[in-house]
Image (cartoon, rainbow, N blue to C red; front, side, top):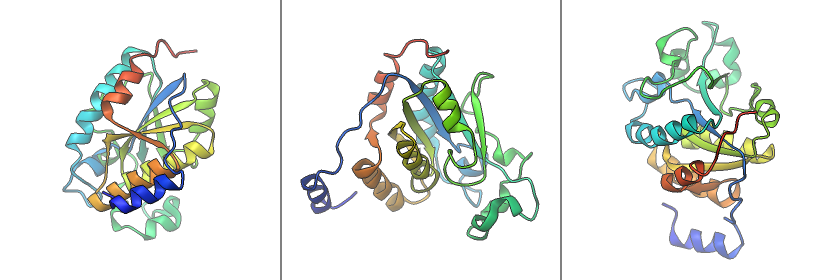
Length: 215
C-alpha cells in the first residue's frame, strides 16, 4: 500500500475525487485467458481470487442485459510481426498465438453469444479495436473494469477510458497482477488520477440497480 504520507499528500492536493457511476454501464473482463490465469505459464499469475470476484459481476450483467466485453491478446504470425516492438519486451509473448488454447477465455467464466470478444495486440482494450465505437453506439457512459494485469492492460484500458469520455470504475478485488507491489501502486495511482477504485460489493450493488441496457 502507499505510505500514509503519500495518501495525505495526494488528498491535500485534491487528487482522488470521485468520478462516480453513470447511468449506462458495461462490464469489461480484460485478458482472463489461459496464458495469464495459469501461474505455470510464462505470463501467468494466480488469479483464482480475481476470477471468483468477477463471477458475480458477470452473472449480474448477464441477468440484467448489461453489455459484457471480454478481451484476449492473440498474434497471428510466428515471427510476432503483429506484436510490433512490444514483442521484444517479453519472451512470453510467443505463448499468445492465435488459435491456441492459451488465448481462450478461462473456462471458469461464462462467455455467452451476446458477449463481445475483443482481440487486441497491445495493452489497452481501446487501442486497435472498436471498443470505443461499440460503447458510444450503445450510449454506454460507465465501464466496470476487471481482469489483468493491474499495472498493464487494466491500467492502460482505464486511462484510455477516461480519455475517451467513459467513466472507468476499477473493481479492487476483481483485478490482479504478477507483482503485488505493481498491483498496489497501480490501484493507488489509478484512484488518484484516472478512475474510481471501488470494492466488489459496491460495484455489484450498482449493477443490480440497472435494468435492461439493450438497444
